[in-house]
Image 1 (cartoon, rainbow, N blue to C red):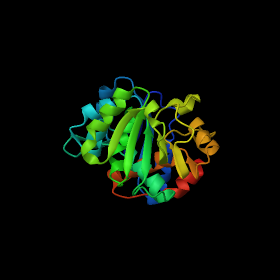
Image 2: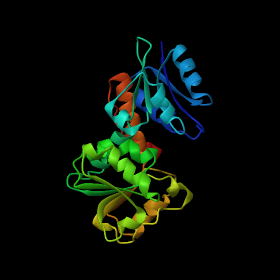
Image 3: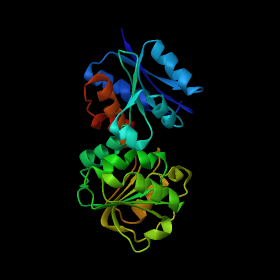
Image 4: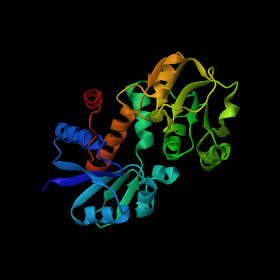
Length: 268
């Protein structure tokens, strides 16, 4: 019997996940089928999928918080993120929730591109779900300091407060960035897709610093272009993060870790 997996979201037709997991399955010899589900009533859609033989789901916008609520048990990283992007159906009928977004980001930057997080000064733009999902894995890399900056100051301060025990982290408004410089700036806002960017100082990237946009598009995103214009040593988008978070989900489901570089290259 071919095991059934899928990604659920709304909208969903643009998702590259089926393509990615199909390549993982072929490469590792796993007998799976991976489809797309247009989510409408999330809890019912998930129950129906699992009651009809589904083994696991990836969860995308706008259902990650609902997936968190639905999970019978959650990993530590999902707990910190307050969101779940991977659901695992257990033999006893229970559902385990995990979040592989942060490990996807860290693996892409650290393993694929060899960024050295240790002792780095990191700026994370945005205090929404995308940023929250990557905080624990970033702080586990022992940066010198992590600053969360957001248009609404209170949201950034609150988010920093929630993860204070995990490492050196500060929340502030965008205006607080004046005079500060960073080795790595990560854009966790969706603004880059509309071409609008958070207003940050032109001189806040250290010489030799990197930029990373969690979003990706066929063309360079607005934040990738910002990095290029401000002489970033590397100005990267989030395609590698997408593939790496998928690889971590695949590993959680199948116990086999796929090789990712060829998959990233094929999607490029």
